[in-house]
Image (cartoon, rainbow, N blue to C red; front, side, top):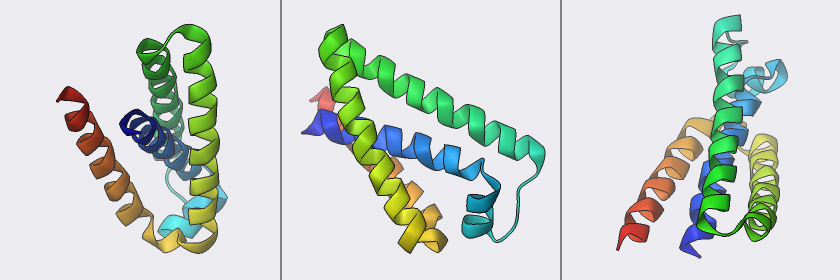
Length: 112
């Protein structure tokens, strides 16, 4: 369960970053569009975070099980981010901080 929450929070942060790179969602979350540099940075950051979550999943399990587990985690993450964009678009800073806190807590718990 700890590993799933780690993957879920990491991939949710990646999807939030990708959502921040889209002009429609920028207007929802920030009230205005971001500069092209910030948009490009958010897009690259989102893909890097999703790539890191894939590498972490493969590292934790073998290749086939890791990819299957990762696909399940990102499916749940995508649904969560879409739900938050629909109903809690003004609270994305709080949601991002909560996801970061969950990620850090799960990483600490995995060490013990």
